[in-house]
Image (tube, rainbow, N blue to C red; front, side, top):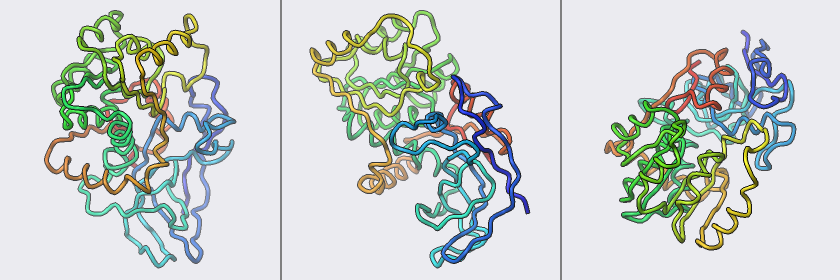
Length: 335
């Protein structure tokens, strides 16, 4: 039996390329006492992985060493168990990474349960959905009638942010990367408006979609999108920050230094801007999230779109596309 895995072959210089990854064949590991052997069925691809490809990580997780398996959340089947808490055939959520087989001491493994779509445990019912829930409700704190703006509005996090904001009675404006994505946000997800950030009229269109300004901006993009949002922020606006994908591939920011203008806005409008790492919140908020999200899904108040790629060998190309906004929905690989 052979384990196929994708390892980090080189540290990217800007946007990752296929040569930054390498597909390898290795022996399937043998579990020892206290371990389980896992067979990956679904792999989650997420923007944070780009940060871990650098020689120095972002501070909340260790970078992936050259020659090591790329990290990632997974849905896996227990093939063999020498751990009392699991048995062969169990389906679990874990972090086996970009490979077909992995050993685990069972720490961090969670049963998937009876989900009809197990991959939801990597998206709406998993880390991305949880990120949307904590960032919006605990930091954004939307009130009925307020305007909530979210970038990457049809992505794994943004789509959930917008739908939760609607549940809480807010007016929701999405920002997405194509007319098709914007139509989906409005017609399928129920957003009040959605603006294409690739439209040359973007800043003006966003202002027109937010006539009463912006009370909550869920930040996960940065760059030109944030530049258009900044002058529209209201007094006492809240800005949860979970990422800034437009900067992940490095490079020098275009245009003048905006720091002084942003600091003046932050002060004069009494804006609350807070970064958060979702790993910090599992112990205190995950149970509430799981209960709320399961109820919303069952009631049809949250809709889900997945972008499914077949085959481990196609993960690098799919991941590169994710960083360029080519995915439509939560990106997962089916093994």
